[in-house]
Image (tube, rainbow, N blue to C red):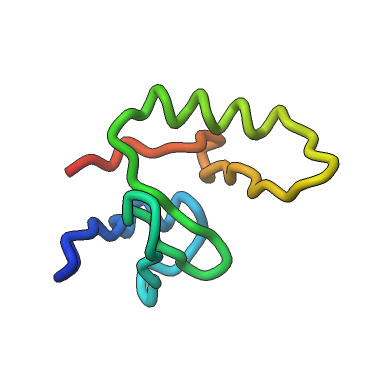
Amino acid sequence: MTPEGIRVPSRAVTDMFGVDASGGELLDGGAETSIRIGGIVLKHVDDVDSAAWTQCAIAALTPASFRLPRPLAADDGGVESTDRP
C-alpha cells in the first residue's frame, strides 16, 4: 500500500505486463485505483468477472468517432491477474 492507501501492483503483476515495477504514477479520478507504469495503466479491481467481461466487450469494439484504450494481454494471454490482497 502507498501512503494514500492505493495498492501498488506486485512485481509479479508488472512482470506479466512487461513493465518495470518501480516508478509508477498514481492517477487521480475514478476509484483512485489506477497506476501508470511506463506506457500502460494498471487498475486494481474487486470484481474480476465484471472486469473480464468489460475487457472482452472493449476488445470487440471498433470505435469510429472516439478513442478507447485497448485491453492489454498479460504474457500468459490473460487480461487480468489473480494478485489479491
